[in-house]
Structures are given as C-alpha cells and as structure tokens.
Image (tube, rainbow, N blue to C red; front, side):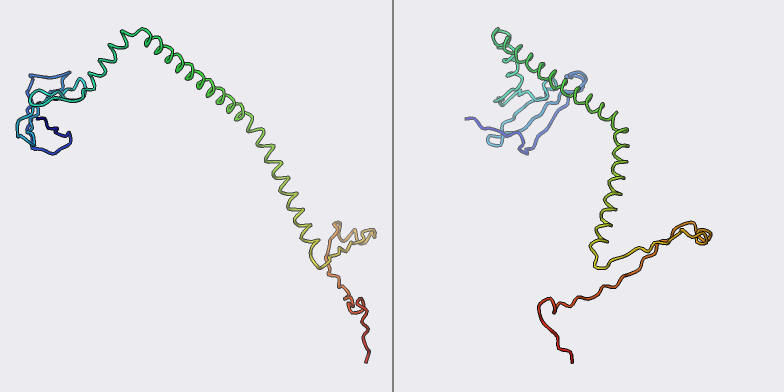
Length: 197
C-alpha cells in the first residue's frame, strides 16, 4: 500500500550534516530523516545542489524528477534530425524578429533625436507666436467687453494745433467721459398717447 507524503507538511524531522564527507562545489549535502504519517516508517532523502532539489534514498519513491525529463528531451532531440531542423528554423525566426524590433527601435530613436535637435529653434518660434496670439486674444476680449457694454464711451481729442498748447504738453492726453442716453418713449412706439394734465 502506498501513501503520499506531501512536500509542505509539517512533520518532526531530524537532519544530519556530514562534515567534509559529501560536498558539491563546497556546498555541504544535508541528509534529512522524516517519518511517514501513516505507518511511521523512516524516510531518508538528501539535498542535491547540482539540480537544486533533493534525491530520495530510503523509504520512498519520487514521482517526478525534473532533471530526468530534461535528460530525455536532450536524447530525443539528438536522435530526431527533423526536430533539429525545425528548432533551427524557430531560432532563425526569433533572431529575425529580434533584429526587426531592434531596427524599429533604432529608427524611432533616430527620429526622436532629430525632433529633439530641431526643438529649441522650433520652440522659440512657438513661444513668440504664443505670446503674439495671447496678446491678440486679450485685445479681442477687451474690445468685445467694451463693445457689449450698455454705456458708450467717447474719447475727447485734444486739439494740439495751437502753439500755446504745444508748449504746455507735447503728449496728447486722452480723457473719457460718460455720455447720457436719452430715454425712448416706448408708449409712443405702441401707439399709446399720454394725457397731459
């Protein structure tokens, strides 16, 4: 009867580090002993730094060894000539795709560098145009605001043709004065006549 011991189960275990007996590239190989949860028989396995895993020694059988599968794939590829040709084609396609993407990246970077080199001269023109555009918009908004108001503003011009005025002030001074509107009699427009008392 077989029983599966799960990998992450918390069981009481003991371990043994054989000093200088078994090492792999200076890494000590540790031997672990645990007990089966069903039958209490001892299970022994040791670490395998070569394959970054463990090897079962006594009391159990491993159901999956990743390095065995890798070894089988290597043997099958070496014996199958057609698979080798297909693998070469796949490798060539991936290399071509990588070369195409690198070429696209290089052209995009070159295009960005060209745009960045033109940017200082172009941005100065844009800045001047933006300032000019902003001043035009301000003038337009001001004229719109003044034209749409109900009050009319008239400028009084100073006649500077006299010689005495030129002596006093060489600059023309503008002054603003409100003009009074005369009210319309809307009743007369409707045909209503008022009685004068």
